Amino acid sequence: MKQQGVFSRLSTYMLRHKLLYSVLGLTTLLSITLDLGIAWLLSAVTDKAVGMDVEGLKGLAIFGVFYLLVVGLNNYTDAYLKNKVSARIRNELRLDMMGHTLKLPQSYFDNNHSGDLLSRFTNDNQTVGEACGQVLIGLIRNPLLAMAAFVYLLYIHWLLALICLAMGPLIFLTGKIFGKAMRSNSEQLQQNMGRTTSFLHDILGSSMVFKSFSIERRLLKQYQGHSKSIISGELKRGRIEGATGAVSSLLGNATFLLAIVIAGSFVARGSLEVGGMLAFIQLMNYLVNPFSSLPGLIAAMQQSLGAAGRIFEVMDSKAEVEELPEPVTGSLEFQSLVLSDLSFGYPGADKLSLNKISLELHKGMNMAVVGPSGGGKSTLFKLLLGFYEPAAGRLLINGTDFQELSLGRLRSLFAYVPQESGLYTGSIRDNLSNGRPGASEQEMITALRQANAYEFVMELPEGLDTDIGEEGSRLSGGQRQRLSIARAILKDAPVLLLDEATAALDNESERLVQQSLSQLMGNRTTLVIAHRLSTVQNADLILVLDKGEIVERGNHEQLLAAQGRYHALYYSQLRQEADQEQGGLNLGKEAEAGGELRPETAGV
Ligand SMILES: Nc1ncnc2c1ncn2[C@@H]1O[C@H](COP(=O)(O)OP(=O)(O)OP(=O)(O)O)[C@@H](O)[C@H]1O
Image (cartoon, rainbow, N blue to C red; front, side):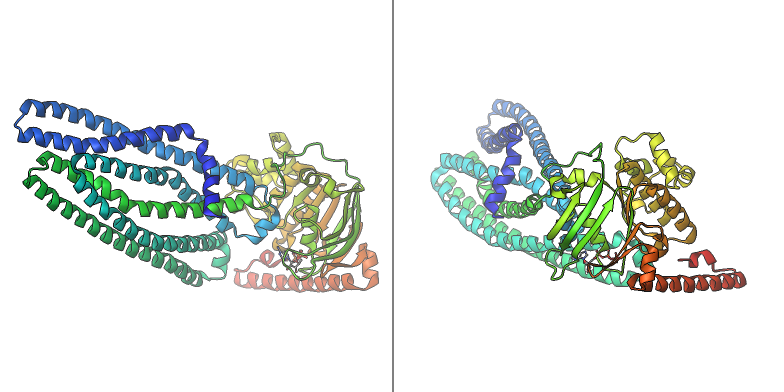
């Protein structure tokens, strides 16, 4: 997005705070007047002192006290209002960005790193906020101050004023050259910081993985690489800032010396008072300083516009819905789900992940999808939940094309139990409420009982109000899953979509999870992705999905009798389980002998 476009978009946020900006306009004008006032005071005091006017000095002293009070009050108001306007705009941008992010389709989250998104919510938001306060006002104040000082200087001694002004463009030009270098350096730095945030987000969110693989040293080395790119950018910034400071202070001081010498000669010739000379020196700072600070402010504004552009880029990404969906209550009476010749390929992928899938799921049916890894099982769920749109074929709910239903209505048909439990930081109560907002305590308890989770929840120190940590990290894998099942029970949707994840659990946890799943399935319509074929033997229909195609279908007995893919998968899993059990028994014996290994940990 062009910087002009970004600025005009950002101005719509600023215009919402017209009143604040108007008051800031007044404090800015007052602060310029007060700055000029100090030059006047300096000249007046000097002239009174030279004229030995003690009474006049007393009057000026009283005026000085009043002046200081006004300066203090104005500085406070000015700083407070700049912070206030910047905090408000940051808050509005944050909320608008979050509002839009929640409407983004799954493909956005699949294709963009959450760490990068996080950095737009935090770093970029901070930078834009500063631009709307401090930087913007600086950009207005500095030229105004320079102009006002110049007019005053003209009044004191026009020739001297013009000599000083001649130095201004030179200082400005130097600052602009360095500003350009500064800008490209901060863009680079911003990119490196974004990459580092993504890296940190990945590793800090999976501490168990780096510990179990003992890759701490490798990660530290990778982090050193990221950190090096940041520090070298920061050091470069230091060098640019140092050079900018040195050159602009050199030019500023040269102007200053030149002006003093010339002003001195005018005083010697009697064309300037001593007081006028002191006022002149003070005013000259107000004329020269804006020229040296403007390039830095312009660079900061451009950097902020870059950050605002990154924020608007998220807000401009195509959303899947226009409005955030209301939780849909009173779900459709479910009769059937029919897929006919449904095909789908991920954006940019050269092969289809689902190829001409046809199936019929009727009310009360219990259907299982099995097959090798990468066969397309999860993709099928993603299409049912409306995360992606099919490339070809039809998806009918109760005989109606799914696109005629709103996404909210479509998703209200399904209670989804993902493989990863997908719990959020917060209490058990908060997580259960996500299943049904406003659920009563009694409803939560009933759901927990059905999910075999009631006992462990009651044993936790604060029961339902126990904080379960990041993504439920303070619970065991089985406890997390049972909680996720309880959340699905609370949703009480007509079709249960279950991505079975029992493989990661020990025998006891698996038994408990299986029990709670049976409760959940009851006589509900169920579509389950089963990784363990032993759990699907009672399914009405089993689909074997391989390389995106349904290669076999039938019930357990029919598929075994067909002696095809299912048969091969089933017996290979049985063998694996028998081997593992054998391994478990052997380990059990070792444990008995050595007293260290526990047989149950060697389960499935
Ligand atoms: N976001 C994505 N972008 C591109 N390709 C993807 C994406 N997600 C999955 N795929 C590809 O789609 C195919 C089907 O993947 P899918 O996750 O549906 O398999 P699965 O049967 O659920 O596997 P598993 O049993 O291992 O979970 C695979 O080839 C996979 O690489």
